[in-house]
Image (cartoon, rainbow, N blue to C red):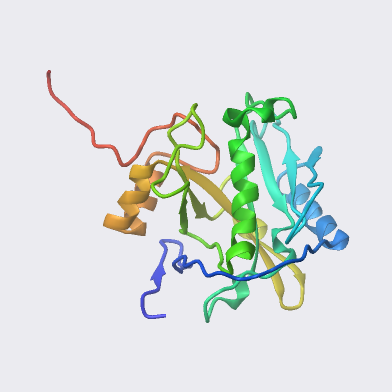
Length: 244
């Protein structure tokens, strides 16, 4: 891959390209669910709730919930089921065919069934589910530094935020990110856990115009990570100084 980039941590950066693929079945694996749940509990904390999917088409997709603790004062949500099927990866990236996604929510976030009837509370969960299905629906894949806009042009996820896209990144809010990132399920099947970071439309445009490294550097400088902040600073907005 002649246009391959490398991130500051040394991991290759492959670019996202969607391709249509027809899949008309659902796959579920109780043993895999248990392995993923155990992995999450070992590295993050006890799973106290599971948002079960009642009807599945391509993959059976649940969301594991780890509640806030004094040490980790945020909710952690992790998909469970995306890795039931392999993604369609480019040549040279075969080790990254299987993935799960995660993100974190502030402790004040409403995570009840009733609250999820409002998009202002539900959109992070909706995006976890939507993006976990995207590779299987379109014969593509998700990987470090991929960005996915919410529509074309990108639209805010809810009236309560101007965030309008997602960045796929490596986990940071865990004690041992390297150990958490990879779960060796069986020979030839390594499941990688990526995190989602919501972006503003201007930040996605910054990546297009200035490159992946420029965006990642600005996000790191601002302390942006997988903890969702609906009204956080837009790192692509220019600062203006002076008197008016």
